[in-house]
Length: 388
Image 1 (cartoon, one colour):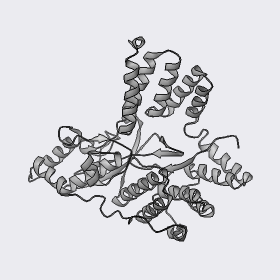
Image 2 (cartoon, rainbow, N blue to C red; image 1 turned 45 degrees about the vertical axis):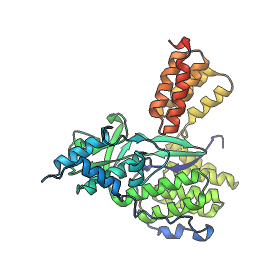
Image 3 (cartoon, helix red, strand yellow; image 1 turned 135 degrees about the vertical axis):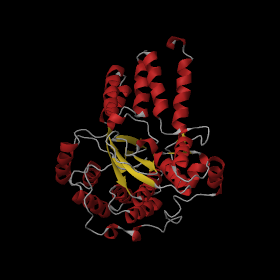
């Protein structure tokens, strides 16, 4: 067991991308629940108000939209308002997943929050909306001791016109998408239902609470996500991690085995199961699962990044630079990798390159707090006359 592993949760800043196509769930998901192991939820768990609008949202629509015989004008104005900071002044902040009303109130949210808010506004105008899962190169993030795999959805407003000209989605002109990425990295789009979006919302909140140490409330949210869409794999993974952290090891194994019966090569389920088996001293079983995992994922997420940080602690900055650069080949938009690469360049006295990657860290940071932190470091670097 010479390979480091971390627990993996599926965190949809917009959506979870499964390792392979989801197969029908045969076993009833309710058999996987263990309500008696947890205290009652601290606050009621429901997705009923996720898309609800309030008076402030209605006032915004009345002030900026004019009813017309067709939906074309309203649709164009809505798409423009989402991207035009003169109207909504939206800010990307992935710290917390919010419902439509809370996202509108603070004018900030992660991709899922912003998509939910845009859908709620569109529906209030009487427009039809479609949600699309966007399959692209897998992205990862970290939150404390959780590795999070990040997927993506977007929103089509009005009609969904089939076309082969853009992989970003049918009727791309009226597609509201809050992620900035190169279209060449988009593999395909897939129409998904509202229940899947709601399950994503609940799963996100479960992961956020789990990262904050609240396994009890997290359990009820993951449970509700599974009930909302039993075919969506992400909350099963989250539930398995919750069980393990809560000390319910047999339940954790049952959930992960359940996922692997649907998706035998699901790397998230396999990696969590390896850890679980190792912790129980079941090393031959763990090794068997590890070999299966290694066939589909030779290196775990952040493999070169972790090696780079080890090299930094040893003072081997050139080696760290090379390792961070290699990690960027796998995750070009990861703000942490850019920051640590900037640190390596700084230690080597290459201040121009350090500034370049600090700029990238600011650009790709998914939270306001992170952007402010990187920006402060960048300002300090700019004061160094050697940079100019």
